[in-house]
Image (cartoon, rainbow, N blue to C red; front, side, top):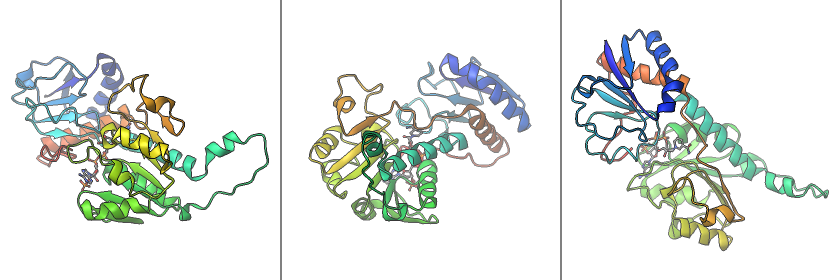
Length: 308
Ligand code: NAP
């Protein structure tokens, strides 16, 4: 019997236990799933960083910690967690991100705000075609690649940027510091889907915001620290950046007194771009446990040095 511990907020147990049990059964895994196994007996931990479990010292037999979250920046600094750590890559979460990003790109592209504001006059302004609107996606991982591909399929010329070299159908791929300026310089709409690591902090700062064309729009469903808040506010106030849609923040919930809330050129959404979906996520967790049990390498393992 494989002993799996579920370590997340108590209300998550109600949401996850049935889909997890179903997924284990479907994968042919004999699993004893509980919230409270003795630590030394646990084979796998299904983990949300906001659970009470913060000290992994006693989990001596644990073969892997399987994160329920895609972003792992809150876990990678935990020095007691020495077991292999896997990020969540979930088709349901990816579909949610593709829908959210595509929706917000189309809002900017079609200038939907203008239509909403001009309900009382006949003032036809025909939007350009997607093929005339270059979009750049920073980060070409599970989420960035899916969003970039969906946008390219709608006709946008898409440039993508990652740490290592990539080759993706329909995407102009750039990487490293050399490709960065090229990726930014043509982006009328910029989407940030990078992880929060020491290397990605303040990816957008005064210097790099200036690399974007005047009037560019920014969509950040990645993580708050990717953008230097004061530099973004200055770029919006000067008109260099026309608008920003921000889903993630350095402090969440975004404090009521934060200038982002009242800014006329910022849309705040409360970290809702993409959530892990219990049904599909449970299938991914079962698949990863099955792989480990049959001697295959774990999927989506976090590189502790890189921090993602
Ligand atoms: P991922 O698969 O790990 O992909 C990360 C991408 O970023 C990779 O393409 C990686 O490059 C690139 N990257 C990392 N460090 C870089 C650097 N220093 N320079 C250039 N590129 C760099 O992650 P994911 O699953 O796509 O998720 C991305 C992020 O989305 C998560 O970390 C999380 O913060 C955020 N997220 C937000 C929500 C939400 O609701 N707002 C939901 C889920 C996730 P390589 O390909 O070369 O490795």
